[in-house]
Image (cartoon, rainbow, N blue to C red):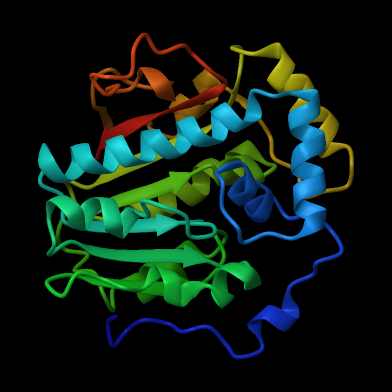
Length: 271
């Protein structure tokens, strides 16, 4: 654990509203995690009942994250990661994947969910050669995020910005693009943008299920056409094979024949 790590407030769990489902806890449930409440399990089961493929989407997104981080470390030589909207800890968090290949890697996690804050210590254990830290900040505060991240990361060196399943929570697309632009503005040439988000145009059943979920009053998540996801990468050099359905992005050799799902992502390098 680094000296710069933000530790959870003692009363953080008291701020968690367990009467309504939360997307981070539902996602954790679909990933097989235990950091959720009955209300989240009920909502997750109801969604999966309407669209069983959601569990595959959640786990495929996580598998993509593992592969892309491994690629960044082993192929591109990246040693710094800024993971914004990290969500609840599960297996193979960003620092675990990166430090498995490069123990000296440094990782900053960013979230403002009180339950994530309460579990921050689970995220902060680093290989002794590297460092991890946690920043309690909102996605809507890019400059504050960068200022805090600079206490752990050297932002004059290439850094991978990870936005995994978070931009769909920003209802206004132009605002989502602006957040990406402002975060990238604080990173040097040779840095990477790593996005994967729910998409439209691949699975109508998923689209209907998500639209119905958004109408329940829960925190909405907006699926976007692939060309809009590609728009986050404007001005960047895309890493092959570009923005694709996540099972198709550098699949593992033993993965069989991957099938497209309604989740697209990829990597872009800042010139």
